[in-house]
Image (cartoon, rainbow, N blue to C red; front, side, top):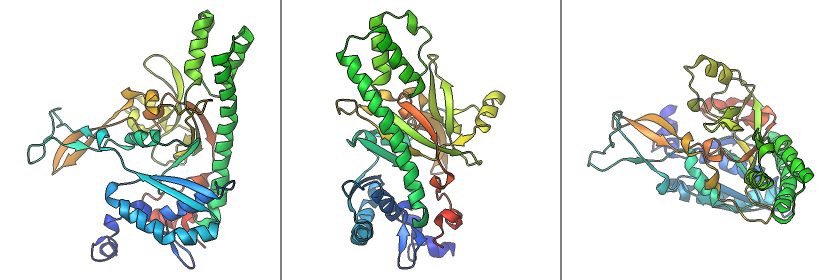
Length: 365
């Protein structure tokens, strides 16, 4: 069975990207994860009947994705009454990082050249930074459901988008006020209240001691930032990150999505805090990346560059240390304004092993 799935002369799934694996067996067709994303995307396109989808994929598989889209697009358009504008990008080689030996010497390949490796999903911030949409939905390729559950998933996502648009509208109003009005003490207090209660910004304890000029500069710095609304599911023991309040090296307190690799689990207190988290990160984000003028933020300005990962890997049987950039929804978004919202468990149905396809969210009947 395993050979039949993986061998090149048979199904050859071993050389197939996860997005193009057959996931769901309907009466008249077999749907890949890629196709299921199109059907979900159609549910966000009601105003113009046009869905915009962007996939970050391996360059080696780009033609396979294009071929699959050509194969399914007319049928998908007919069923959903939606036109799909699908685009792709690849992880940029400029984000690759150099590997080193356990002794922290440059790791060299057999021909003597240096080994550069892909630097993890944090590298995809470059791809995200190249998008110019007003609202961007982010999720993993394998987190899809069969059609009978997709309305519930989409309703949850629309709710997250509604939270974003509601708070962003107010943020835009205050951005314009900060740039164009002479502010009274009442105006400043109103903006502080918005930052605190709606964007979860922990304002400096010294704020009241600042001059008016410094207060306004401080408010601008905190308000002119991208916003992310992150869906969180109840923690049922899945491995991965979750929502936490953190204190950084400057003493600033903020909401962050923290992975286990970022926590010293040998520290009893930290281990207890991490393992008693109530919620889990399913990677369900809705992002606003523009200011009130419609100008896009440079997302690279909001990265915590100190939040990189060092992992242990092997190459040709030899151990090496690899540097990964701050995770896309971790350190790469560390300085975004962040809102966490609880979402239903059905929104988290990833396929990490073939057995996950046996779960209810992936069963047609």
